[in-house]
Length: 170
Image 1 (cartoon, rainbow, N blue to C red):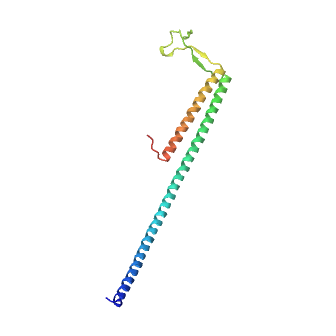
Image 2 (image 1 turned 90 degrees about the vertical axis):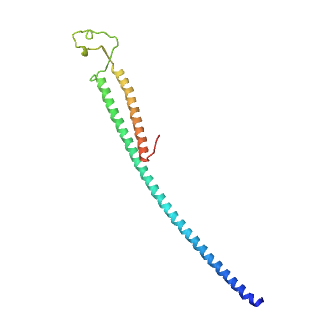
Image 3 (image 1 turned 120 degrees about the horizontal axis):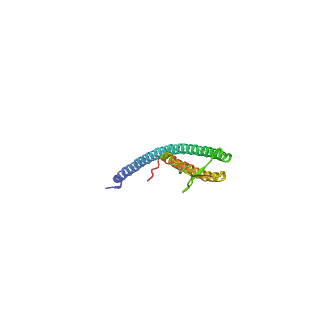
């Protein structure tokens, strides 16, 4: 083979390699562009889903916050009402409109010894409390009632949050 015969063959092979290389580059560029397009679509979809999930959570938070604020207002109203009732009761005890007494253990009085009264209607011996003692006992009971109201409000708040966020407890 002479140089004049193999040169056109080498030139054709070289041109074919250049064309093949260029075509392969175009295919690679098209594949990369398609992958980038798909990645952009997936990123946009993920961003939309994230925005929707965030909006749902914010809506739940607002609803839970409103429910908790309403429960706190209800607790405040209950406590105010209970204090008003306690104050009224104490005023009635101090004025003598209400009298408090307790049964006396082992006490014998003439009314209790009366055998003519029916069996279920016996009069028992009782001791009347002075107003200061009655007020002190009422204050103790009122503190217990306040604590119970606060604990119930706490339980209600817990249940509100649990139900709002659909938390499963064990």
